[in-house]
Amino acid sequence: MASINSLADVLLDWEGLLAALLEHPELAELLGAERVVLERDLAEVRALKARQEAQRAGAQEMTQRIKEVVTHGKEVAITIRAVAKGKLGYRNERLVHFKVAPVRKRPRKPAAANPPAGEPAAE
Image 1 (cartoon, one colour):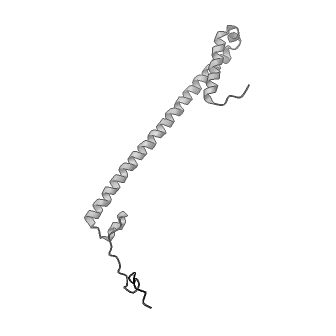
Image 2: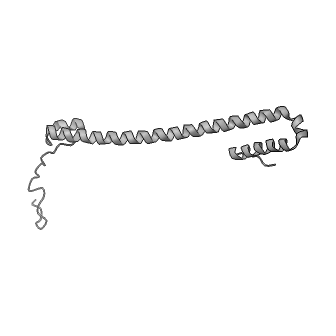
Image 3: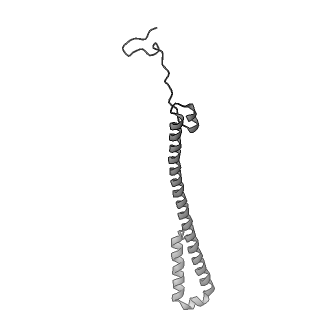
């Protein structure tokens, strides 16, 4: 007989054995202690499987809650940065502390460095 590996198949196999023992009372007398042990093991495996599923559901619930809190926190961070920008001014260099880039003047490039497109560069 091939080895049974999946939990569902093992449980079905055990249930089948217990049902077969109920149908054959002559074997039930010989294997009474083993039947009790198998019934106890079957009940314990089912209980453990239920706990495993509950923990998996709990982990998924925690993951969803973490995502909700992170989303809310990002919204609050956006608000804080926007208020800081409004209170300090959009050019204030202290905005860097809030990880906001202040608006800075662009440096003017020298006229000789970038000639117009139609003229050759002066040497």
